[in-house]
Image (cartoon, rainbow, N blue to C red; front, side):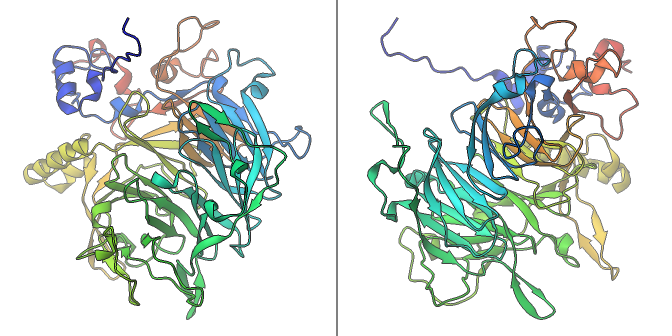
Length: 560
């Protein structure tokens, strides 16, 4: 053995793109046995989304801490650590729970719910609307309906900084700035259109305000220290607004998203009034005497919103920062190119920007395409989305979103799959006409046109429908979703529960006649109790027969 040597991890062949999938199919080593025939193309999105399942051991029920643990409470928000197998859940009573992402050994154990719970922290006296971990997982920021936010030291589980006095209305979102700020710069928003920037390095707190990691050891915070009061360093007043009967009123800022490290001075925001996404340069300080702030750019609204505006509920950034995903109230997830959020010459984006001048925001491009599912229903502004980067888990980049349909949905974001379907549809349209092309099984992307209320033809945005529904697990609206450091998906619902979803098959040493993966759950049927308190990814499309053909082996399927 070589001292200090760490072997380089081997990237699995199935994660090396479309060419690797073709090679595996030729050799008969596809992810599903027998799927090597030409009628099952290697770019079928169900290969990536059909593996998710949840078992009874993966369920956590949120019991009320304020009422002695004998009643249940609704989880409002969820956030997962970047490096640890821990997830934080904020509820309607102002408590924060830290739960373990690993399942309990016996789902029938009455103490299994408490064993998943690692810690409970009373943070607020009102509903916690949003949570965010810093990059090193040592700090947890909150946004609450009581107009205040807090920064909690996770190691000592005490409040280190109070984010009070900056908002006069209920807070909606909170987000740590990535990059060199290292958990010190925070953005918050409220329901009257205000965005505040906080730098906790500007507070008068002692050096031991937070737990720090130095030289392979932790310098712990003194739990007896009182929380330090922070003050906002920059304010974007009336960042989003709506006009009602000629009066301009603030609109709730429902989404905040920082750009990645290297461009972390740029902040994206969205609201409930319309689908325009605003780009802000936080290096410009807005004067206090100026009530309204002007962003660098505003994206163009989708063409289908010409006659009625729809608000946005959540934003997520792709792994490489080139794509931005926005969940809209018209039950679509719109995809934007971050390189085209601002058009024309943009000296404001340089390392030495010029002095800010009065003017209007520049125009950015609208969405490139959108994700849809026949059963996806964005029914409220509590529904969030979350993206799993390439570096997490065993699979590709995936986008998860909640739904009012009592289920979560997962979409693969690999654009090579979309281009294949796009080209296939174009060829089918030229040969058979648009009716056949838009109704084909392989037509994962469609680009039909719609008619407005005045009979005008509006070009529709290309639509991707390659998502999978994670159903049969919740019985009320699924609001928050979050990817863990191990690649699992956490969903919270108004049915007072949180669930972990995984892809890997369960080991064989399970007690009794137990299922092992999502395929077993889909084929188990409703008899025998194998599906008890379980959920699984549904792969049936509108063109499938009564039995889900995706799980049938090739030996059972006739080929002509």
